[in-house]
Length: 198
Image (cartoon, rainbow, N blue to C red; front, side, top):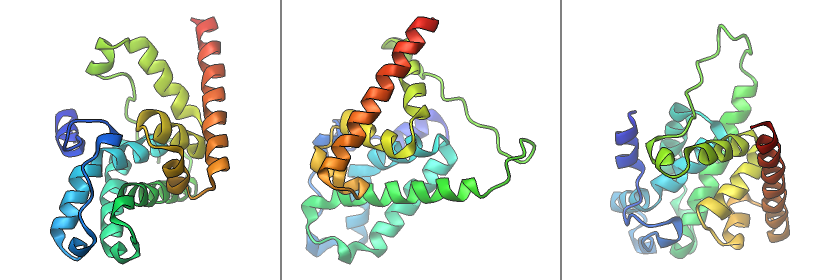
């Protein structure tokens, strides 16, 4: 998928941040395919971002995004409160991404068998907004364990409240806060060490 196609498919419908997502469809609409379309329009970017940060691979992230929406549609009856659709969906995406990551660990590690990793360097937008810093932060986040990376991405990049971060990660509030704190601490150490090298 090209960058422009990715942006068109995964761009939030409102053009705003994760916290500006349109209100989810009402519960009575959940049996309708329109509900899934509205859920996708409002949340595809956030779902893809979580998958991408856990997996570090565009193709797998797109697969996880698609699988997450399919799983959400199949499990729609388990969503008790339509206002909680976003964290519910992001939790599905996080679990799907972690499952892919676990399956990857079972794959052969021979470099001749592994697919080539896509370049995760800064894109054009990053070049305009301090490309060097953006690239260093991205690499530092990519180096975090998946649970810590997901926590800091949900909180600091997507702007979710800590209660929703905990819900998405399937942890208690204090555990989610601890993950965000640990991730931020590791990021500071990594970026400080990177400053000394540069």
